[in-house]
Length: 176
Length: 81
Image (cartoon, rainbow over all chains, first blue to last red; front, side):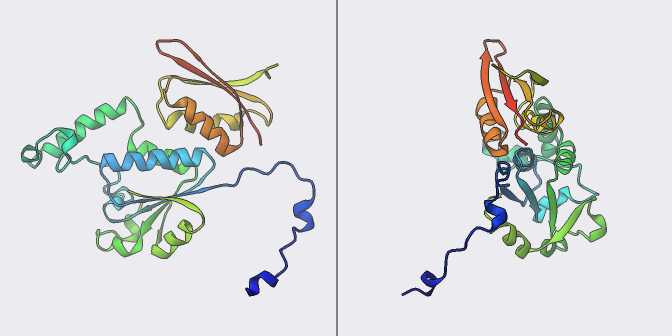
């Protein structure tokens, strides 16, 4: 016989049974890991993060590897788009590797995106205002040449355990 | 009888996620029980506002569309808390 079966079921405390106004729906949690800082990865991450925050979710953005370029004061506003290895873009790789191709693709895409969405720095600002938390991954900071003083305001440094801690809190977890 | 609209939020021309982000701000500008009217042209706004209401607990009283172009969606959302 399982020992757990002998334990009495926990009784709701008096406070819980007392009549209270309808409780707010349970806040859910969204955790996004962002490993890259190209436009086509960053936009989906911030669109989901900002929508989650606007929907009452607790949102954590965990930046690692190249994703941390967004947290680096020196590179935060320089998100690019690489046409290399992106067959759907229609630029042959042989041209995509030429000097200037990334800059050109980035400029074209940023111009197009402007019609639909705010810029990445604006999306980040919006995220911050809505309480989205942003974290730098400590094990990869050194690898990416990032020290604590390079981080933009309001970012803390965490490790894999912190991420797993949030993820196991019944969170929606997305890896980009 | 539909409750009087306390505030109208015009998101015409905005695409996901902007309407929802604006709605999250605007709903705080009406009192609990009051109605926020939202106008949108984003074709995703109908399922998106239905999901948003469900997640936030604010009550989606009605959604309707006016033939366009552009087609305009109108949502009446009552602040729940």
